[in-house]
Image (cartoon, rainbow, N blue to C red; front, side, top):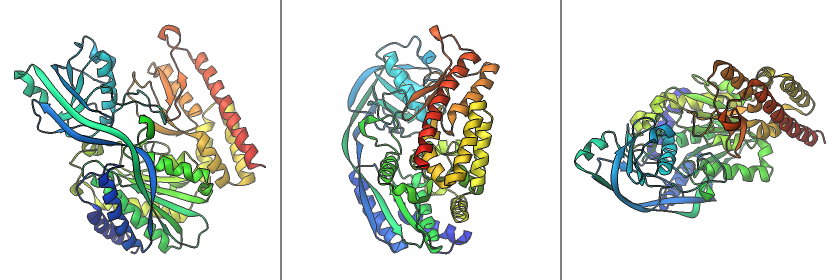
Length: 527
């Protein structure tokens, strides 16, 4: 395989066609066992290497039966909905079902019918609101039904805490409620269970002359046929591993299990479990220190193409736009990034085009653009071969921290001084786990917000809050997701908004914690 654009495009086309079956691959299921064996054969054939499988403990969900009466055209349900049978009067909820105000006056005990939220993942919040309002079940009318969206019973996003979905949740076609005009009741029956089991991550090594190695990855579990999410991503990863190997670089190719869901204990940060499990093992074994770069592909075949990742790499691998800095909190790459590995994530998330396909049967080959898929590979390979641009990293930190008060500017100076003494690679590896965090800019219940990965949110969020406070549009609170804690809260006694002076005190407290972590890091590196 040559690295020219047309050759890359041709190889992606061949591989993705061979990888695509049109069938679902649920992590921890028999279908995954069969698919892993098939993918192993394809990888070994293309790369001429041996593939080994790594067991990953996880929760796997099994749906045995789903029915509604009156019968919809299509229907879908997902983890972590469990077995239940409900027959009750129905009630159409108007407005945004993710907000408490939509549920005022809801007649307890009825089956709630709601419209799909603008962000499909927020079906989770609609389910929690419905359960708290006393609904016996939730039926979501989707714009592009059927759609599989994981729900659970915990409001936040926590690596360890979670719960099963409190009531049955079913997604049906738009307009289903019009069929109910002649029916006073709806019957919902689900037979499903969640059990502990194992998924399988695949690992293949392309031997090169470099002491450090590159990790190239994608996930193989998928809903429905999942061509863009993520059959073509795996094809892109295989092609990238081949090209880097041809340049004499050492490469680990990874095909992750349990990206869509699977975290143990019903954890509400349910996604990217396979990569989180893998990155924890890398860090504990100290192998992470040898990772030059992790390249991840996830839905990177639909316009507009995005490039997220470590500042020292996205400067040279930037795609059509970089709307969030710096990682993709929804992707496998965030697992390795937050452990300290440099990353590039090629993806097409957050766009209306993707949301129309996301976790639906319409995610088929004709919806992906091979030119975009090839562009993603060539950009990632270019960045890998050029290597890290540490000047970009230094400038990024100076800009991010330089906008903050004196304590933040002092931190930027101290980081740069430490990097001059021990080198940026060592500083980055130790700095990322304390500085890179997933942030929810707003309360989980009260505001429309999505997770964002941010460096030093203690500082960057503070500046944003000051601007929003002055304009009167500041959120009630800001959360650090994953390990979960409130970073900033603008609610005083009785819910009264706080002023800038109170916010400044919270900033001071956050900076004290940040400085303590940095001083500990500095002590380790200067030993």
